[in-house]
Amino acid sequence: MLAILYRDDFLVAVHKPAGLLVHRSDIDRHETRFAVQLLRDQIGRRVFPLHRLDKATSGALLFALDADTARAVGGQFERNEVGKRYLAVVRGWPPEAGLIDHALSRRFDDYGRRLPTGAQPGLPAQTAYRRLATAELPEAVDRYPHARYALVSLAPKTGRQHQLRRHMKHIAHPIIGDANWGKGVHNRFFQLRFGCHRLLLACTGLELRHPHDDAMLAIACPPDAGFAAVTTALGWSVDHAGT
Image 1: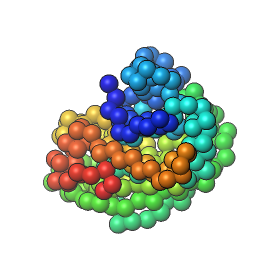
Image 2: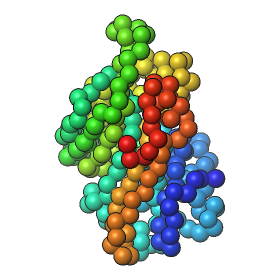
Image 3: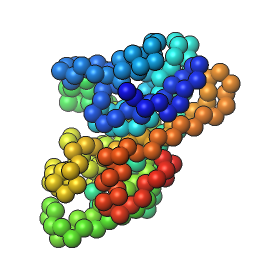
Image 4: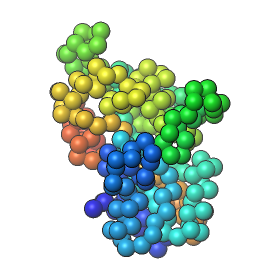
């Protein structure tokens, strides 16, 4: 059963666990469980997904309960009017704050199929980040005698494919657990040291205008137990989604 974060007559938000697809995809044909299906069965009515989270990403996922609401809120997402907050654990210590302004091309189509290299032009993409905490472990990982990691808050200003994962790779601070844009040696270290076999990226908050009264709606989603266990082991306290 999915944990419901918010529900009214028009919208419902859930906490999507890591490893769950939002909907069916050609890239994971063997999967039989999807957030859309699970929520539909759970509340007994049709739901309309309003945005996507990667299969490996956990956190706040928003649905509409009717087509008119889906169109209205979907427009906010398309116009980049929805505020989105994420937490991530990354390799190294990035600057205290910054804005990543780096164009990204589409790598996959809407069904998860890889597009030909160079088939799509780069599209404007921006991500604001803030470093929240750091840790240094006396472990020789990769080519350094000590291993450094950081907890960062991420706020995408655009919504490109795999934007956060690709942007953090672009500034040489990939997200831990990222099999595509991360570093395998650090991913394996977290598996062995902390028993962590997931991408350490979580959507912790959404802010949007409610389509039926125009009031601001803030949906918070604290990191799940698995994410929190790693941050606790690194000496960080993550007790609020708005960190």
